[in-house]
Image (tube, rainbow, N blue to C red):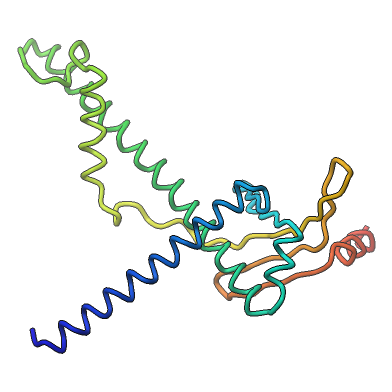
Length: 196
């Protein structure tokens, strides 16, 4: 490998590290906004609630708003991937423990004496943890397909003195097309009433 290629590879690696640092910083900021109550994510309905003061900051320009919504999408997709991975790991780890227990049972039924720690009578908490760690280490990222990319809805809400917050506007983000559709809550209510 020549020096120029090494330099290009090193430069590309530094660029990737900067991008990862930016994404990590963005996700940490979104986590803090979630913790402070300025954002609220409902994964089952795929709805994001955005506090009006926060929305006002990012709606100064169309580019800022687009970038903010895209970052929200990336964060929600990351959360969805993490959840899917954890469920996948749990299923695989439980399968491995069950298999070890069945293997131990079958060896006991065959009358074979074994020093395997997978036997039900010998399967301790440490043994279960060891089996789970070993199975987790065996799993490659390609073993589980990535979750499907899904659009989400967002609602800008204004705090009021009432118990319920007031919706200011609603929107929809489609990550496949990078399209953001928005409407004021009054327009949506008017359309719903005219559809009745």
